[in-house]
Length: 480
Image (cartoon, rainbow, N blue to C red; front, side, top):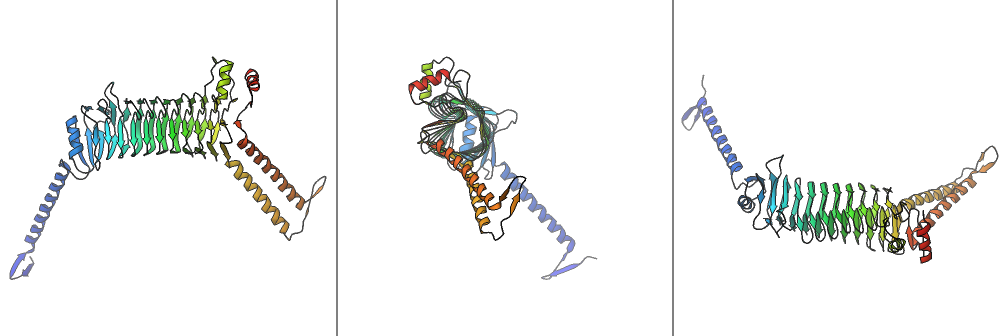
C-alpha cells in the first residue's frame, strides 16, 4: 500500500518523490564531472597545469601565459634562436621530458645563458646545453630558485665564471642529475655561487674545468652545504674540486674525489673561509704545490674535522726532472707539501674526530712524508692546530683523578693495606701515585701541543727542519 504525504492541500506519492531525488542526483553528478573535465583540460588551468611543447614558440608561450604552477613537457629538442629562456619572477615552472629513456635538449644561443631564472624552476630529464662554439652559462640564477631533480647541465663554456650554473644571490638545490663537461675561463667550471645558497643532496658534478679557481664548485660570499652526491674529476689552478672564498661550507655525506689543482687544494681550497666536515670522504685528489686534500689559507680560515676520512691525496710538485736547486726553491716556498691537509698563514685546523691517513707529498726521488705527507702547516705563529681530542680526554682524566683523590682523602673509611707477594702499599699512597702519573701524562701531552703550536715551521710525518742554506742543501743531499 502506498503512503501519502499531505502538504498544503496536495498529495504526493512516495515513489514519485524517490524518482525526483534520483534525477537530481544524476544532474548534480554530471555537472561536477563536466567541471572537473574542464579544469583538467583547460589551457589556463590554475593548479599544476600541464602543457606539451615541441617548438621554441610553444615553449615561450607556455612559460609566459599560463598562470600558476605549471608543468611544461618537452616532446622534442628545442633550440633557442633569440635569447635565454627567462623564468619570470613570480612564476613556478617545471620542465620535464615526455620520454623517460631519452632526455630532450634545451639548446642555448651564443652570448646568452640557456635559461635565466628569476622565479622558481624545477628541472628533470632535460639536458641544458649550448649550440656548438657558443659561449655562456648553462643556467643563470638571478635571485630566483633552481631545483635540479634529474637530467644534465652539460657542454657549456663561459668567457667568465659559472660554466654550468651561475648563481647570483639566489638558491640552488641539487637533488639529482649531473653537471658535467662545462668550462669557465674564470672560476667555477661546474657551479659558481656568489652571495647565494647552494645545497647539494645528491647527483654528480664531474669533469668540469676552470682556468682559475673552483673546477667543480666555486663559492664566494655564499653558503654551500653537501649532504650527498659526488664531486669528482674536476680541475682548476686552485681548488680542483671546491674553492671557497670568504664563505661557509658544511659537508656531512658525499665524496670529493679525483680532482686536480695545479697549485693549491686538490680537493678543497679554503681562502678566508669556514669548512666543517662531519662525515663523508675527501680522497684521491692531487695538488701541484700544497694541500692535496684540503688547503686552508688566512687568519679567518677555520677547518673543523669531526668525522669522515681524508685519505690517499697527493702533492706532486717536485718531479724527478727537478734539479737540487729547484728542490731548494720549492721547499723554501712551501711547495710540494701537505698531502692530506695544509695550513698557511693563519689557517686554523680544529681536529675533533675523523681520520687522516695514506696521504703523500713526494720529493721526487720516491720518498714520501718528508714534506708533510698527512699534514703540514707553515708559519705556526699565525697558524694553529687545536688538539681537541687530546685536550678533552686529558682534561677528563685529570679532573676524574683529582675528584677521586679528594673524595678518598675526605672518606671516613680507614685506610687498608693491599698485600702483594713482595710489599705492602697503602691505598692513600696509591691514589697519590695515580694522580702523579696523570699529571705527568697531562704535562707531556700539553708540552707536545705547545711545541706543535709554537714551532716556527712544523711539518708532520718525518720532517727535516732547516734554518739556513747549508742545512737545506745537506738535507736535500742526504735525506732518505
